[in-house]
Image (cartoon, rainbow, N blue to C red; front, top):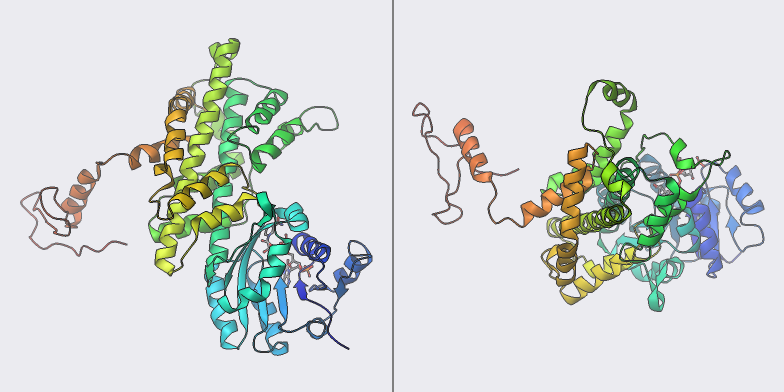
Length: 490
Ligand code: NBP
């Protein structure tokens, strides 16, 4: 029998099922497979009923239904399952066939897998897919990287099913070789952690500082979503605040304040340490989830560790002052968000140099513009900034964003200072401001730090009155020797 399927998809959980239906809508014939094969039958009998989707109960049966070159996409749990499926697939595939991993794999695993799969004569793609269930069904953001020779064979299908922005432009473009696609997805997730934390800090200051109800905050978020903060995460926060529990009270108030995480934020922060790039806001967002998880300790500490009361009674009682402070919170959120994206782009810039990828920064903003969790109007502005100057040193230096930070700065500083005075935690707002102030200072106190390092470890220092690259050591106490340590950096 002639093979009929355009692509195979392994993994019938939420992402896999929805992406299959999306591919089907776009006229592609998909053959579905899953480790627990009963899910194939369930899927065909329910969600995929009445579609062209085919099923397979073994890898062999799946491959036999595929047109050449065979395209097999996995949407399974990241880690070992991906390696296991690659092993199972290799004996059934032929040179030129393509394995695609659409899960949240670590980019270093994708580097390793691409080399391995190519050594068997096959091609490999590691692609980020973002947008959750809804995105997978109706158009996710897709960030593919891997074997360049594979791209022409998967471009049509991946672009067809991806989200589209103004003018029908797909949120899917080739990112680069090896793990570049998964790397960009990882940074996307780090930024997502940051965006979510910023929204939570704004919520917390409104709730505990201004004493606002969920309904009032719902209205504020609805307003914010009409302007420069217009984004999916503001939109869902607006809707979450309006959701009532069965007893009519806001559901959000009944949700336990301990956050979970699956690891992609952590990976971004670990990689930033390797590359020496300060993504302070994303790191703070990851750590804030860790602090939230210490629920029992926090409950005990709350009875012992004293601080000011958070209530901003004077401001909350005066409608004009209250509105002005809400506007300041918006400024703090917006300016901090600019810093977070600037840091994310700094990280991608360093990664491109280190791993020898030529990343298209405007193209990445476009891929994130629709379909994914961080989609926003703001990303359109980032695309404009990089289109104007692809070699932009830092997003904060783009004229538009520089102007936006300038406008937001007074409110941002007011919120950070007020939160500190009233004991309301605002770690991401504060770290963003601290970074902004560090970055715009030509001189930092690292001169004293270098002196300390030289004092106790003979680590040497450079001098302001000598050319860069010349290193000096001082015998600070008169007791040490003249031998200096090596001047390498880690
Ligand atoms: P899950 O991440 O929950 O994975 C479920 C799939 O993995 C099922 O097909 C399951 O098969 C298979 N699987 C597991 Br679990 N362990 C396996 C093993 N040891 N060997 C073989 N197969 C195994 O599904 P998902 O939420 O649809 O996500 C799929 C991928 O997409 C993941 O990498 C995820 O990180 C990523 N992602 C998810 C989202 C989201 O919003 N959910 C968004 C973006 C990306 P079984 O049915 O036999 O147990």
